[in-house]
Length: 375
Image (spheres, rainbow, N blue to C red):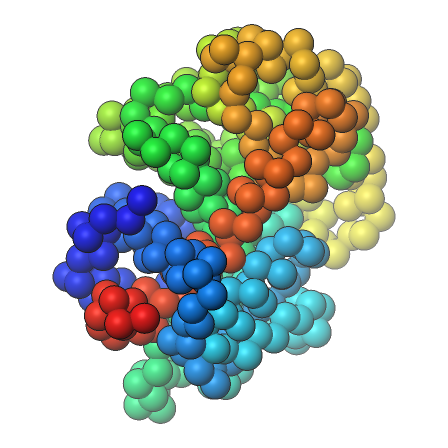
């Protein structure tokens, strides 16, 4: 799938030292280069060829929210590059005791060679925290004349989940080798009884996929809107990339004639905003009460499920089912649909390892195209 244009040394040189805190930070050409690197690293890995491009370096990851899959992908990616992965809980930092994000960045950046961060539960905080961490690292390295590149990788924030959406894009490209141009992709809210999930996955998909010519339909019940800035980016990227972006009020509307479907729950927008104030006040009781209200709101829309009837509405009744996992079976998706898609969603999830490998490699390995060719 990789072609030589994807691995242009000129483009790769421009990615050295760069963090990825949103796919909006990269041009479409740079994302294509990143995808080419990920394809190459995956091919080498599956052929059993080691890729120790960054031996004996520390890949630190800071998680303020739990995630089995992303933690595993970070550790697997770093280890395949020869790095030492260390994954820690965000509660072990001094942030709750008044340490600023810039100070956290300096403390971690003086020892780490790359830093992943997951901070996704509070609107207006996660991505801003990551950018301040990156600034702290950059300031420390400059003040100490340290030439190291210590990129920061967004492992999910309030705005975007770039390692997930890049993995999704890699899987879509493999599934549709002729390209995404003209492909209809439904990104739909779906009912979940578990918790008020972040908005970042649907926002990230809406911003990224139209760049590659996909026709994206976003569907959700009233009250589950996404952030205006991400919707504006989706429309802008659709116009520039030859895709399209629209919003529907019906799951059936989004699924009709779709080539791929991505039914995924997220929290009600107004309640996600309320969490901002409760978190700022450190009001644990209010946070729990808001969460309960969100689940009660979700329960009004139990009919928003990806089931056999809705899958029959898709192109030929055989659309690709996608999910970032874990899916709430019996709520977001029926057991039958998930059973048939089990291998597909596992392969989709596995792409995150190679997306993270590519992000670390392009940021840290000089002459990456030559190194990959020699491997």
